[in-house]
Image (tube, rainbow, N blue to C red; front, side, top):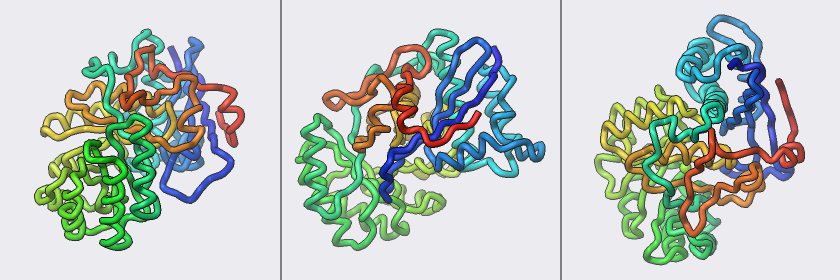
Amino acid sequence: MKITEVVCQIVRIPQIEKKTASSQDSVIVRVRTDTGLEGVGEADSSPEMVKAAIDAPFSHNIACGLRQLVVGENPLETERLWMKMYRATMYCGRRSLMITAMSAIDMALWDLKGKHFGEPIHRLLGGKQHDRILAYASILFGKNGKETAAIGRRWREAGYRAVKFGWEPMGQSEALDIELVAGAREGLGPDATLLIDAGCVWDARTALQRAHAFSAYRIGWLEEPLQPDDYDGYKWLRDRSPVPIASGEEECGRQSFRAYIDRQALDVYQVDLSRNGFTDSYYIKQRVEEIGARLCNHCYTSPVTVAASLHWLSTCRDAFLFEDCVEDSPLRHELTHEKVQAIDGWITVPDRPGLGVTLDENFVRRYLISESR
Ligand SMILES: [Mg+2]
């Protein structure tokens, strides 16, 4: 089997809002082969930038666009192709955008591998340890405590036992920060799991003060309190915090996670399959389990990445929560025929070959704004 074509398709909903939500557009990467099989992947970044990283022609032995590195190759050789792409992009890659683009291709290669062998990806990764995972509804804060409480009630009524609130307007003042968390707890009621995603807004000392203040509302974790590059700050905070510290969604690839894992800087490592592919997510999982920390997915995009996250997280021994983005965007809910959504707060791991999802081609055509091959 040989790769014959790599197609990038950008889909975008007509009305884009200025908010911290990546479910408003997407770049879908389709890897086609001479056997007629096609694998599908997705990257969570600027779709146009990812497409450029794939489309770029050869410039240098270590500065080359990704398409021409994989066309003609055997798609089953995922580890070798990951390393080939890493080496051939060293001048422009190694972290962030290029790793994200590599991840979309890698996701498509694993989808192909599963379809070729007639097996779900979780089996190719060594076998799932969970058939279903408790999902948490992942959503943004309201403007104040009252709005946040109403959002919490909505998702509790939808059947979720766990809800995470994130980003703006947290970080503007101590009073508002505490009001938001108090509102979230009020809306969820006493029994639900409450998770707080600060959105990289404080220094370590302020974050420790907030961790103490928020612990009165029994939060399950405090996510991304610091800038993602503040590895020593995370280590300092984790050693002192009364609540678990979670982070990792900005990290792209094993080298990016290494700074956290080597320091044992986090309680919960959040891995985004659309930024790490299956190849590096598998490697990161092994390392995190080795140090006795916990793993969760990060996912705020379409059902393609939701499915990828489920295959991967189901193989993690201590998987305890699944991030289920509940943004009201058609991209989150309608891009594939399979809905891949939580029912009564639980989300089920797909069992069909590959990712186990199929694109709704009518939907893709309707929202398509750009394509390259
Ligand atoms: Mg987050």
